[in-house]
Amino acid sequence: MGTLTSLSDFPKEKSSVVTIGFFDGIHLGHQELLRQTRKTGKQLNAESVVLTFTNHPSELFSPGNPPKLLLERGEAYRRMEEMGIDWIITLPFDEKFSNQSTEAFIDSLLTELHMKALVLGHDSRIGKERKGTPEIVQELAGQKQFEVSYIPPFSIDHTPISSSRIREAIIHGDLTTAEKLLGRPYSVKLPVIPGRGIGKSEMGFPTANMDVTTTVVPPEGVYSVLLKSEGVVYEGVANLGRAPTVRGDKKLLLEVHVIDQELDLTGHEVEVTFVNFIREELKFDSLSALREQIARDVKMAKEQLHSLS
Image (cartoon, helix red, strand yellow):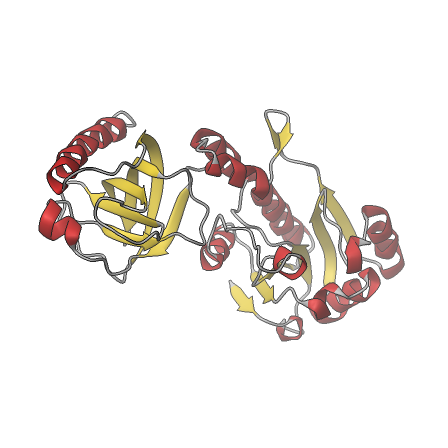
């Protein structure tokens, strides 16, 4: 798969089938759109191209309040590659981009990407002020001789799948619904940052710590989890919260204790899959009381994780 940062860098000798979107989460609806793009590309002997953005479009229209992401952008691109997409073009969603008229934007795709077909989601509107409705784009397709298709809404339980619906499910702790809409259990992929070492030195339960302040996470508390590092999956118990017994700051961290393993994962990127909620986060009167509770949490996590197999 090729990754470009400009339309003009697309190979001049190739033609394309293009889809457009931010694709946060690569949920089941996104997967269908990507499959149809790849399928159409093969039918037309053209390259499948995803035109996506380095920043969420809402950052332009609601600065200071961007949505937390379901997937880090690099991980989203990796999943697109797994689905067989030939090219990803990443552009900043800025004033210049958003102010293009629908026709000017289509013309740039035809000129720079030699576009044969455009594949869009049912609710897609392109061009300045989202004026590029399906009727207008269909009319331009007839005039400029390219194909266009809109993928019907992909629904579960009679409700269309969307990234915003998945965010809401996760935020409210409904991991079952999130998994159903994503087509996989919800996980976060983040680098392990240095900790204070209290878990190892004073508690006997070393942890791999991750900053989740910009990531969509379920409610604070203790969870059974699976941690994947360098292709190996480990069972774990995680505290998502502020660790009030041992930390004085208010920083939200995900702290994962890998069960029955002694690992130093600092600096490594790991993937943590939330499996089940165990309990709310609590402040304990002493480290010994916390240590005893963590031992009970580990036992519960083992039971929950073993029930999956």
